[in-house]
Image (cartoon, rainbow, N blue to C red; front, side):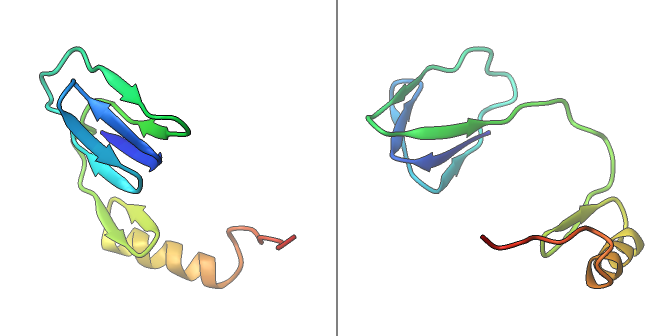
Length: 86
């Protein structure tokens, strides 16, 4: 998976992807050529499938709905830390 943060990139010579867009890469692709334009940045993510159930709600991603509810409760109670604005 490639996520273009800013600018634009050319993938495998013929696919142009611009900022704030995502492209999924074929599972069997072994080589990827990425050409950046000036002032471009991107994030490349790869990995093996985890073979687990995945549940998402808002910013939370867990394995079960009950884990999601627990995480939301912990967040609301301040158990996940505090962000300080500068």
